[in-house]
Length: 440
Image (cartoon, rainbow, N blue to C red; front, side, top):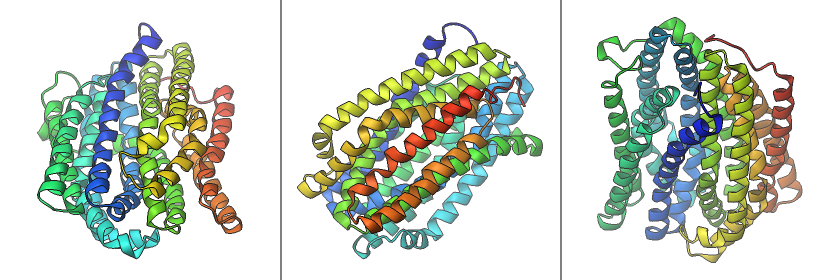
């Protein structure tokens, strides 16, 4: 990342990430497709309502590990092999602890969380069952993400793709077998996900024990360095809060959607699954920018960082808007993957056509946030997301839905808050205070 064509480096790094994220979305969508077509709209609503809570918990913990990736990337750019080794072992050790903690918390507090969201009684039982089984795979989920973060920080975006491909195939096959042929119901879909998560985590972890380089894992060295962990959390905690803030805002949105019944839940849930594909170029370029910025700042290449941040943002915004136009036109066809019921498709289409042409704003916000995270300035994205994607979004929905009790007004919460965050991020970018050279 510190030498050669910036555009080529970013694109070549992002392409495997894109296919990996595509597989991740297919991985997530499989449950909804199989459940929606085999078990019906109530079961689909049950799967859909758990999505935001899952992102709330998993997003926070994964955000913590962003600090680990940034430190590894900067240390690698600065050619400090010892720092890479210590950061890697600390990050993986911490991931194992947090994965176990998430498993326990998610399993036992499921009913409380779902009641807090106002989940309707007709989908509550299925939601609780899916949620509890899903979180049995918490360790696999977190460990896989941490291992992938190590690979990506070192500039390797291909290996995570291979492991995720294997996991996706397993999840798809087991979903069909468990739900359609063995009749395990919604619990079968969750069990398939758990098994697939552990497969990807084991593959990634084992590979890290065999690679040549300072990021190789030795079981006897798996321990937490308190100083390194403190630095990782200093960088990663704001990102974890940011992810949680986004999820909290979405939980409030989901709670308001739940009030419109299971049809609205199924329609919006189907759209959110579809929207996940839209995030692919955004997420991939954001991750590429984080690695690019961290390595180049570690190497002292500030001019290259500025140029790369502009190029990466332009690519991300362009891809997102092209996909937005495609979604606007073809969304009724796409939604038929999840349900053939006209009411469900109509609600999902309405949400898509409200939001899709504003994906450019979402992309620019995420790309600039990726730049700031790579520079270690994770507090800024956290504050911006807290203000716009949580507080403003919740305030808007709380007031407007009471005045205009129509589901369409909920959909406008997203373009509004994307616009605000984009403006703030642009202002901060041109002030230039986010660039700092070195590992710390």
